[in-house]
Image 1 (cartoon, rainbow, N blue to C red):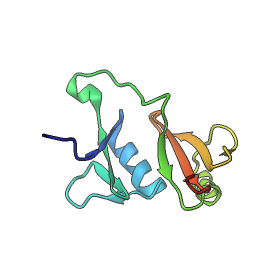
Image 2: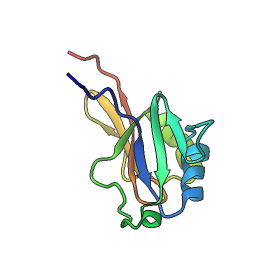
Image 3: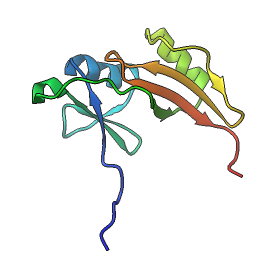
Image 4: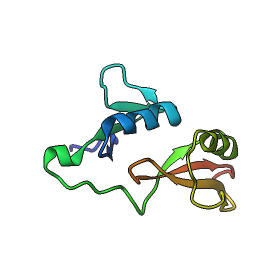
Length: 121
């Protein structure tokens, strides 16, 4: 039987590829892909920047389900990003099992710093 193996990449819609690449690489610190100009990596997840309008599709920012970026320390990473001008939507949340801090990229795509601190039961 055929099966789905994994998530290959996450498409990040933008209206300005250069601005978006700068944000994901220089502000967030994602690892550039050595073979692709518009791809960068967070661990094993590829963030692929694309311009929907250049392909005749409408631009729609990803909203309502922020992409969770696992951080070593949410408070420390948040402070680093705030020093680079990133604006967060509210205080860091503590759910009792994890910390979450919400923000957006320059195109309005929703992202979240996340770290689970409680062991899985």
